[in-house]
Image (cartoon, rainbow, N blue to C red; front, top):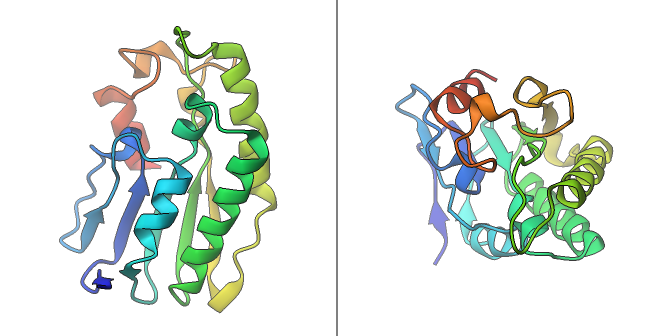
Length: 174
């Protein structure tokens, strides 16, 4: 069954960093899911029917990195995902949100390695072409959330990965 999202002019597709994002518009729909990877999002949005002339805010890729997907697999999935989005709508703007680095090391991930991989993926976003169906790409870079060491600034996070209310406000205003 195809899911129609016909009443929304602004749609957010992201991971846990985007689940609390709210935009003051009655035609706003946040379809973000905690733990979302590019692979799971690709499967999920294949059932969606998007209308034309909308804004899609796309924020995914961090979980792919945290879950240790191979870099080429992440790039391939993101490329497929962005191309699928572009084929599902016409004359829309796809806002590609660069992945915000982390500021936390854990048992399964090392901050430096994760952030290097994030930088590589963010550079890849710059090269993507979204001209299918007269769509436009807008790169959204959250440099203001990053400290001088290229980590997530802890003023905007309580755990080094997710954004706190101050960080969400910046996300919303970008």
